[in-house]
Length: 276
Image (tube, rainbow, N blue to C red; front, side, top):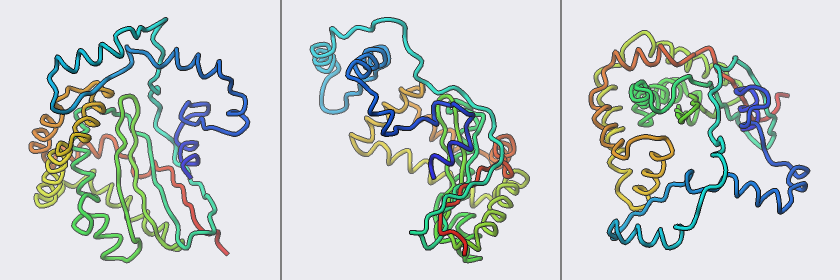
């Protein structure tokens, strides 16, 4: 199902479409692995995060002890995926008779990246859609009011060079199209009408709380700093993000959804029992 989504989203021969096969893995030699390691694993592409009760000087001495002689050799390789154009709408069925209901994924590529200012209003709008279970739009419309789905989740996958937006849900095969029509209607509404003050307040509170919770463990702090480094974002981005979320307006949410989200542009992949 994952390969079907990527194949429909990305251009032919895109690196994201590569996957390991027995025949390709069997051809690998020790020299292939060593050469790849020497090319890609290098200090100028490495970030080391140290979190804990240790001084910067102690951390520096320890890192220099083990990594001080590590040198980069040759030109820096290109390790980032290139931007991709907007995908074309498509529909794919992946038969799976072990399921009793369909799993549906609606996905599309987005033209913005993590550094774009519209990231923040898009996140607020995302949390209006599915950020708080029954208290959000898609759960309310699809499950509570119409009984069409058991779960539904909207998501943003925003990266350094390419991004995507999608909605996933599970339902009876006969309800796939009905649920999709409601999702498209809600997304179109987000592009035209402002979200309510209550929805806006709830979404922003959820996002600010998530920022706070992400720094409540040493592993969360370490992984957060590593992620920010990989995206070339400032290390105080969580604090900046909380301030940005607090200031987002309904008009900004509407504008961002109108600019980036394409309700009719989804790749739809359905995995479930074949119709009889």
